[in-house]
Length: 458
Image (cartoon, rainbow, N blue to C red):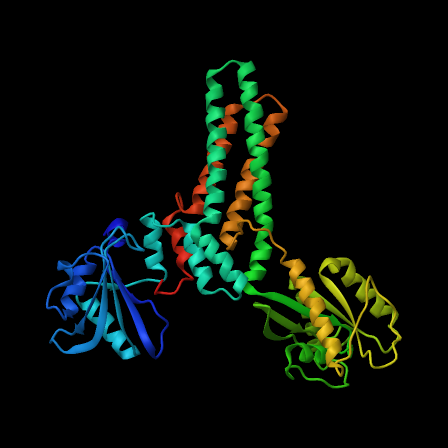
């Protein structure tokens, strides 16, 4: 069977969330979708679905091979190409009972459909040019959005904002390629002028790609939330602060040094954004193998975190070793660190580290509220974004990085005798890379990798 035939086969799947509920949705799409629906449907008007106009809704029943009613449903009839997949589609709205849904799907399969694979409906929409691959990824991102801003960004990409941006880059490179190939036919003086135009296009394109790639980390934080790691020496008050921020006793608090030996995570929503708080093992020299492993993980969490709360015991003088450790962390992560001096209800003796001073006491709720305000300001600054396209996936980021590298190979040619054949070759490779971003030139294997993480109903 050819790949083309495989993507025309009628497929069926549940599109609504699994579990009990009021309404469930089952979608059948493909070359024989309407005939398959006809074979399991009994409409109230006694007609067949195939005798009705497209984009109409019909009341009826789904029956099994013996005519036994499985459920009373609504059939939404849609002829291609004006459907999500671009193919004939029937959507069945039934009662959301798992047994009913499984029975309807089983009847559709016995009538000639097959169970849809993960993301196969969306994959067909890409193949049939209803959407491009960037918009397909936005659908998956939309489903898993963890914040209002993430939802907003995914909806924007689904409308084609990033696709339009990539299309403009593609058009500019096509123009550069046309100028490069035209230079083969002209004398040196005229081709030099072409060279200046090509250089200008490549330079501006590299700038646009660099700007776009920088949005990836922001989009990742919007999509997955912000990681906030509490780092500090033993008994600095990290676990008490952790519990105060999340509003529950998630971490164990004692006076014994080294109580927290592994990272502890908890999440909360603040201003429609998901925060992941990480309580880490206290930083100190130790011979305890398990505790040492926890301290190593603390350093790893500091590296991965979007924001670091450097927690300092404000009630005592810091040791020389602690000052070295704190300053080392500040030197590495200054831009994402907030220094928090704990136990402000006691006399403060700790040396001042870095710039600024946030003093709190976990016994004083207002001081914790003040810290949260500082955190919100830090998060807002972290996610200060322009109304511009943002990358959604690692795939998009990595392909743009590859495109940037390919275009970078062209720049040295402008510093010496222009070899337009080589410039054209590099531009053609760059254009091929853009096609992979949008799905124009992506391989079947690459396409499968994109849809592997989709749910079956999409």
